[in-house]
Length: 207
Image (tube, rainbow, N blue to C red; front, side):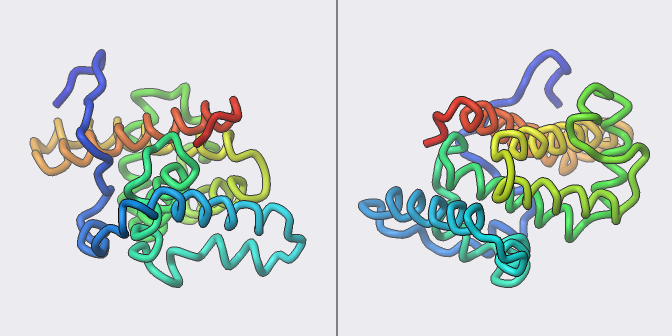
């Protein structure tokens, strides 16, 4: 387990749970994948942002739940975190994980919020949160990425992932579970990537 003064580095973004990796099909043609990823992400963002139809927003909010992460993975999972498709991919994966594993997330969040309480206010979760509050807050964050401030939404998602990462690490130390240690490292990496994407979005430099 890395010390509190260091941050792990990884060769590539890792999924938050094994089922995601199993759902990802082969990558598209490299000659077209970059443009396709960016164009599809931008079209989705623009389409929702300029729509006044709440049903459009709701469909995008539940896009991964309705169609699965595999379709999004085929388009976006290979994109760097500081690009629009890469940032939205990580946001959708985190959102899906929270929706599917709410009780586990709450357990980890409560442990992590005691370690780094300063991030609690940025995440927007109640303290102590319950499952429905956590899931509703992640809905709000994802909705905000499309209808409000993308940079703020990504920054809030990064705070959520970071808090849960610290909680996962704490529980791993208590239980001496190597699997949880690896999960903590992946979550921390995702949190850092989302925070970096948020900074780029605020600066107008999200690729």
